[in-house]
Length: 376
Image (cartoon, rainbow, N blue to C red):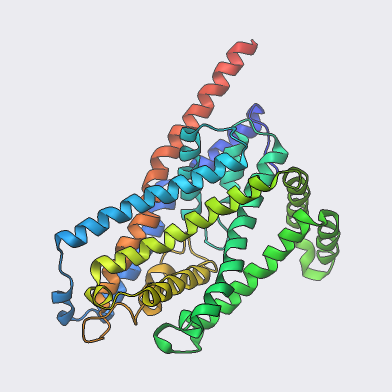
């Protein structure tokens, strides 16, 4: 995970090819086919003709859909603000907004459980930031995201109880039990990273070296040592920062995630009359908790951007809210809301990335050419 400087031409050329390879039509179209295929399959298996009267469009619905687009822009701005804070203002606002498009795109074409850190490291390395600072920014964003979930999930559970975890009041099952697995994984690596960055990076490095000296784990030693080195670099960079740096970093992180969950709530409010009829603070808080729980489960997804799994999980997770005025679950409406949700939070960034990333690469190449001419 240690990026090379911008002006090492041979290394940069191979990395440019690798990044450009990630925006091949096949890399983008496969997640789209998976997502639409899952939606189509669910609709074919479960759609009922009696759902059709529930799928009505009004000016009210369109107005709230427009508001979700505003929320999408606000969330993007929150992430851009975080990047500007973590880079100590090294980038302009325009540059931060551009880089977040690329970061989100890289996350959309890689498994959710992996994330887009590799592309993020490459991108930041081309913006002439020191290697230690680049590693610190990328790793610290992972820590901030994890910290938000690790802290907020128990707080929500304390107020909402098991209904936050068990959709439809049902306990157990693969879908709901996976919440505990995902949260446990988040808590584990979150504590490791936090301890390594803020308490003792040397201890974590020794631990990873020891752990990868046994049996089949030896094959992971090189990767583990890269992570350990990044933790050391991050610790050196982050521990000297003032409290305001961490407060703003966490505040913008929390804002971006909260807006992401609220966006789903707004879509449901726009399309489901029963939610508007029984609107209450308790109801909305429970919906928020359920949506956040769904995102925790999606963190385990092995598919690019959670595609397929996200579309399939949406209805089951929110089945007791997407109902008609008689309290009956509306499959077709759940599919429609899930589709709009994925357009706004996933497919939009797939499309935007295929436009922004090649333009950014061309800008990097042009800067290199100008620099080369200036040194001749």
